[in-house]
Length: 134
Image (cartoon, rainbow, N blue to C red):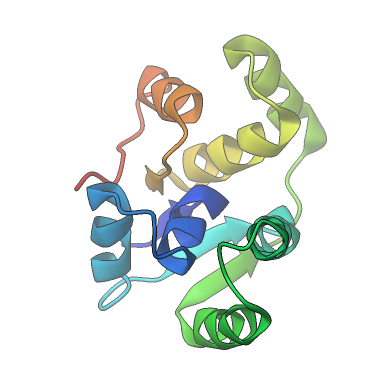
């Protein structure tokens, strides 16, 4: 069964100074499952890595290599959601619109959510969703 992958998990895979069992669990699931991501993930993960590059956490060569590996993973970009549904979730759980997009996708497809964001994880549990746990 697919699961929703947020950028915090993928960023953890990129930066060698980060480790989290939830990121490891999501990585393992990609051996036999596909991840689903909202379109904003494509921009968000690249921005996070670029910021890491600017802070000296990763070099340009590492960024290029990581993005190449990321493109080969079974990760599917999903069409835009209904903005009203995302707004409602953002308001209900006091999330950013960006975080609510991940929650809306997991809820719409009734699949688990992989995130390192505590507020997003709490909102997912409140909505009755499963979390990818390590």
